[in-house]
Length: 115
Image (cartoon, rainbow, N blue to C red; front, side):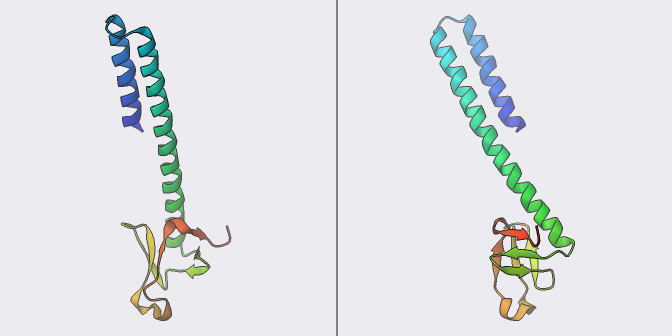
């Protein structure tokens, strides 16, 4: 988010510096600022969405580590039969799980049971 803010303020500063130069018309400067504001708003919305998703997965992981049951596509996921793979953010069944062996559930499709 700091990078987005930095880039936004850099565009504003460049526009303000260019305001002293008459090579860019006043209408073009306003257009540049509007485009910069639009890009900033879109990037902020994207960043907020990613933050929300990250918090949700982190809460899911914490609940899993506390021994709570996780529901993934109507399947109960517990520490007895699954582990959490942080690289792919998914629940992977252990080899000793018997009939559950080979199952992989993305954390984004799961929720804490009872919540």
